[in-house]
Length: 302
Image 1: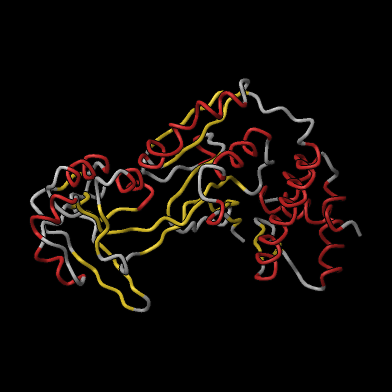
Image 2: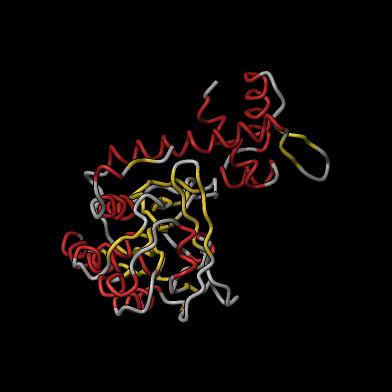
């Protein structure tokens, strides 16, 4: 039997919720759809779908097969698209969603170079720190910080960002520096407000298998990352942020790292729906993003 056809029909039946709707979308006779599924189950030696007069549901084997089949077909589509990419010219509107700090510090400043490479492409960049539904919002790709839990997305890692403790040289000269994470309670630690809750984000530090959580207790807090950095540069206190936000200030000597052995890492990834054809505009944007970060820390997520 044609295994790829079997996968395609099976996925369409599951996504449609019925054989009838799947046959309409596939422009295939319902009897043919039924036969393909039966042949697929016979070939695999297991039942994939529970059928009743009212609804279809996946068996455990069916759920496992569905997840793998979606990925396989996505890989096939991506391979075919790669072969044709030399003929595809990126054009149209590219809608991307990303965290505010990452957009401001890395992506947006480099968009002029991207636009020069692809003049027929228009970029709409949504900068926000909320999780966006790609399908509902019509977004082509998202950039995320942290582990991705959405199995419907294909992700490529761009960078491993480290959360580090820093302060200005002037602050360190006046107040010294902590020797251990526990010493942070004696310093003016500035807080980052989480969302609309008003709560301050705790500082989670790690060294090997050791972990320490510090609750910032300083005299200033804000929900804006750039304002927090400026406060630290001005000598107001100690802050704890991801290094992709701090790199420029560190390079310029405006801030210095503290407790260098204590930090955590969080991946930065670009992601797009795995069941969506990887268009030329998304492909070139992904390639562009991978060039913004150190090559040694870029890798495909498996």
